[in-house]
Image (cartoon, rainbow, N blue to C red; front, side, top):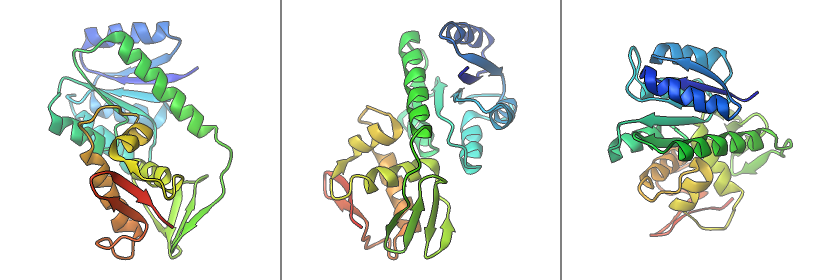
Length: 228
C-alpha cells in the first residue's frame, strides 16, 4: 500500500486530510511536529510527504533541508499558509516537488498527491539506463552517482533531475517553464528563478569554467540547452 507521511500540527486539519487520504487508499502516518516528522521520514520509507512549513520544534523548511541533505528523493508537497513569493522560492530551492498554499481545494490537493506518487513510481520503475559521459563528467543513472575526472560530486536531487532533463534533450532549447514542468512538476510562471539557481549549481560543480560554460548553455531570453 502506498504510504503518505503527513506532517501537520493543526489537529483538525490533519484529521480531515488523513480521513480523505485513507479514502483514496493510502496508508497515512501523521506527525505533529518537525522533529517527529523528520524521524518518521527516515524510518518509515514514505512514498510521499505532505509537509507544513510552520511546525513546532523544527520548521518544515529545516525538515526538507535535512532530508535533501541526506540524499532523500522522496516527493515532498509543502502545504502551508506561507504564500509569499519568497516563501515559495525558498521551498523550491530546497527541492520541494510541489508548494500548495492554505486555504486549498481538497480535490486539487488529492490530484497533486496522486500525480506526484505516479511520477515517482514511474521513475523508480525505469529500466537500468546506460552510463552517460560528457567532457570529464560521468553519470550513472542507476545509482545517481556523478563523477568529474573520477571524483564523485554531490548534486541535490533537483539539480540532478535538471541535469538529466537537459542531457536527454541534447541540442534542444528548453525554456524555464519547460524545466519547471518536467523537473519540478510545477506549471506556474512565477518560480522560474529557481531554475537559474540550480543551473548555477550544475555549472559550479560540473564545468571547468562556470563563467564560460561548455555544456549547460544559456539561450538568451529563452532558456537553456545542453551540448556534450
